[in-house]
Image (cartoon, rainbow, N blue to C red; front, side, top):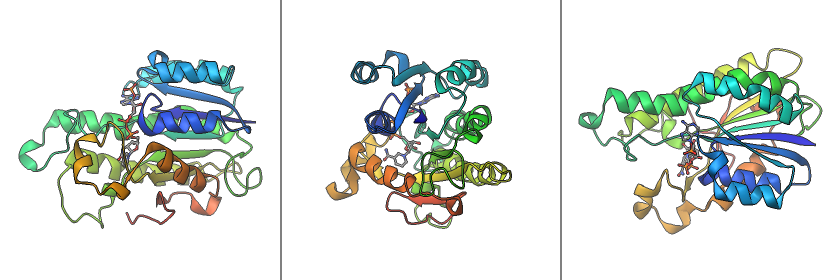
Length: 259
Ligand SMILES: NC(=O)c1ccc[n+]([C@@H]2O[C@H](COP(=O)([O-])OP(=O)(O)OC[C@H]3O[C@@H](n4cnc5c(N)ncnc54)[C@H](OP(=O)(O)O)[C@@H]3O)[C@@H](O)[C@H]2O)c1
């Protein structure tokens, strides 16, 4: 039975991942974390719906000590292994809107966005990868055969350097491009040994969540996904991953996004 950590579980895509994973018969435990996971009403009602399955833990990924402190609790809840780690936490920018030009760029905006979107997932990988290495590989195409756990960093198509046609969104674009590099690095380091963690960056499409809300007006209705639709697409990719995919950046439709 699988154990999953959803980092950034209190809203949006993370919350929907929790709903889908908690209702799966092959998942024994969903560890839901975010700064406010323990206070989130929807997560609490899921706890009542799936008794003994949902564990809620407050974690701020911008604070290394905070991540380190929750490791013993997660070790206990996960019985020493994690089969899937989903890093969903991110911000577009502390102001809620991406920079349209250089004049909007600030040290503080860049720093805060990097802390949440890049440094947070890397530190989460640092503390939880030993548990991913212990997985017997319950997700993915060759489940239980060639790999151990799966680490997913949620990225965005705007992270692609070669696909950048319009500029802007400095903090978010830079932080997600760096996250893609981190994913590639992790795939190398965690793929060297006998036990191999599959590490991928996944783009969920443009999804109806708080993060993208200021930009929904300009998106055609059929291009603005519900969290349900996006997570269904992403779970079908995750369920088909193999060691050959490690290090890749893939969109919701399974197509590779160029770096
Ligand atoms: N929505 C889109 O259109 C879209 C498009 C491309 C990529 N993505 C990516 O998909 C992922 C999920 O986005 P979303 O749209 O679901 O965002 P969202 O609805 O704004 O949710 C973001 C989550 O991150 C958590 N979080 C933020 N800062 C945190 C911190 N310092 N420590 C711990 N948790 C933190 C939030 O919880 P708390 O506030 O409780 O901490 C929340 O659960 C992100 O990586 C995003 O970049 C989204």
